[in-house]
Amino acid sequence: MNQAVSGFSKLSKEEKINWIAQEYFSNPNEAIATIKQYWNSDFQLQQLHDEFIENTITNFYLPMGIAPNFLVNGRYYSIPMVIEESSVVAAAAKSAKFWSTRGGFKTTVLSSEKIGQVHFMFPGDAQKLELFFQKIKPKFFTATESITKNMQKRGGGILDIELRDKTAELENYYQLHATFETKDSMGANFINSCLEQFAITLKEEALAYDDFSEEEQNIEVVMSILSNYVPNCIVRAEVSCKVEELSEKKIENPLQFAQKFVRAVNIAEIEPYRAVTHNKGIMNGIDAVVLATGNDFRAVEAGIHAYASRNGRYSSLSHASIENGIFRFWMEIPLALGTFGGLTSLHPLVKMALEILGKPSAHELMQLVAVTGLAQNFAALRSLTTTGIQEGHMKMHINNILNQYQATDDERKLIAIHFKTNTISHSAVVDFIEKLRK
Image 1 (cartoon, rainbow, N blue to C red):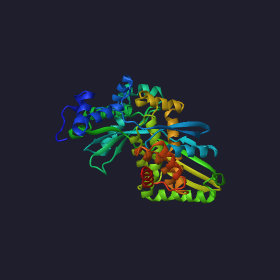
Image 2 (cartoon, rainbow, N blue to C red):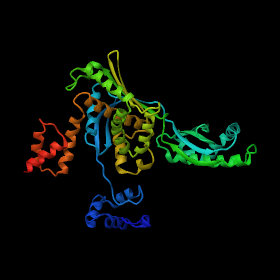
Image 3 (tube, rainbow, N blue to C red):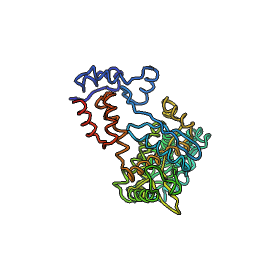
Image 4 (tube, rainbow, N blue to C red):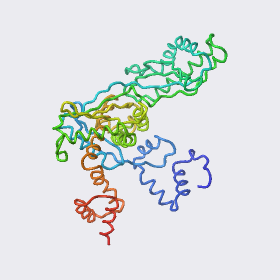
């Protein structure tokens, strides 16, 4: 591409595709065929997908799998997971089955408070601003009554509004720091609408406040936006059993396994290089369910990783202990999720995923997402502290290699026999395929 394109958004879908194909591909017809190959044959369904975002040209598919046998608070669940990485769904399912015979997962929503802020500049006296805020605080609630009415009917709404002085960090900088309960909705649009009205009310009331100088009356609102950091929207998930009950085929010495497992978690608690990969494994499970249920995995990721850094150093999200012969493995994480509004009522597979989960409330979904992350983490640590991570991962990954090299059925049978007794690696599989073809 040698120059900028003008008016791309105004082109029809066909025109966008033709432009992309002509501009970037040596074989435009082949590119167009690939793009259209992923269109849905149902015109209305395709149109629905096209309208989720802007400038759409096709659909980008990810596999949707099921991890069954999750026993959570005494009830069995099958968890839908959307992810492209091999071995993740299998690992979650294996952990779920392991813990289903050892009491299952126990979960609790500790709090569900969400946060939004109006960021503004005030070049005057902080005490005068505090008096002004206390006087007009009720007006923030009355000014947003039309926005909060439906949310209040569902038991949600604005919980509180604080004035926060941040001038020690940035000159003249203050916040209206508001907390919300959004029930089964993720609540982003609701929160942002409330915040923008707060900003209007703040500016209008300041202009009419006689105790402010002319300069103080002209409050500058920089922005009004929710926060994806939700340290008071917390769910706890845990598993526990007697140490001897950890015994299975690959855990012949359960005490030794438990001690090594706890040490592995301890390392992730104090070593950021390990903690990042440790937590990435947790997010394999969390993101997969968040995607399957039509929630915002970027917001969840940002909030969780901020929480992992809340004590000034990035650390493990999960924890483990052995006390009085009991092995415990647990996690407390922030999760702002919704089961109402947005894609949850539009995307057919999202609706199906929520149906599989038993039409959960937002609180119930928080718990199911958390246990999937904990299960994934347990599976990874069990592999790392026993056989190593690559054995199970490469067994699953081998299919991707075989598909990449378009292996025939006969080749697949011979490859399966060969790698029952040989170490699997990408290069080893490729070398064996090349030997077969010679």
